Length: 397
Image 1 (cartoon, rainbow, N blue to C red):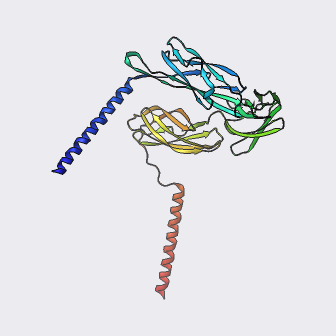
Image 2 (cartoon, rainbow, N blue to C red; image 1 turned 90 degrees about the vertical axis):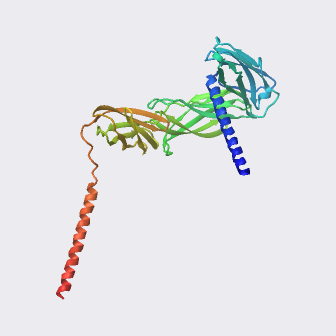
Image 3 (cartoon, helix red, strand yellow; image 1 turned 30 degrees about the vertical axis):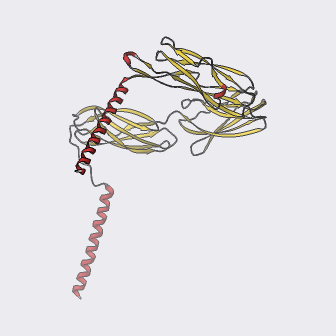
């Protein structure tokens, strides 16, 4: 009796849990359906940096970008190690549907001293949820605006960065070296030599920047001339920079263009109906490191994956895929070959014909196998002949 009661109780408990589970799913589904809009707010500028000046007040203006033309209220808050120095002219901002840019002001009261270096924090914008049209909820993504305070080091100190602008191959490459003077003194002379290497660390070329002077608490930029002309690929830059009596070396990678694999030729131009067809094409890499490539073949709704293959630097090779033509009538078609590699997805099209002929079975015997079989047969015949001769000699004795 006790076991029966226990089983009944467990069954009821299980049913209760199942009902609760489905009830939660139902409520979640309704809640998700009620979210009619998820709107991302924009801000301008996206970040801000200031140089430290003791016992001063700095006012910075920003804008909320109301790209979805909604009405809501937003709270402004500060975060990070500098939040105690930050306040707002109005901590709450009213956004109206007819306003695209809504300005607000940040006030930073700097103390008498701060630890040298870059002190960080920022602004967090938190929109308040409102009821949208027809009782729906409008959800907003809360953006943040990073703020940096650059506190000078004693004597001379510069933060150095290399800026490489994006260009296509064959275009002179703009290379800029930036000197952010975070020291307490002016920099009289600053410049750099930039060495460029391929992925195997083979030297390609070098360029130099003109010398510049940089006042304290300012940013100086100098451009290397002439800009090198490079092919599509991955490169490494070694920057040997100097400012007055100080030297600094930094390294970074950069790319020219995007990785590219071209299909130079489709070798299989005739397919057979209702068969798994072997499709061969020539692929060529216009990149200076190895690429791993996958993809698929497609005619109408018939699609099959291409087995993974690799292409080395500037390599051309034959690649193979397989396509099932089940349900496709004989005739002319467009074959889509899509290749995926290094974040790229490229599709090229080729005309093909599905023949009325029946697919021939693959030849099982290739020339090397045939030669090996002939050699094996000859060896067997020689062995048999030797055995026969030995047997006859024994019989004579």
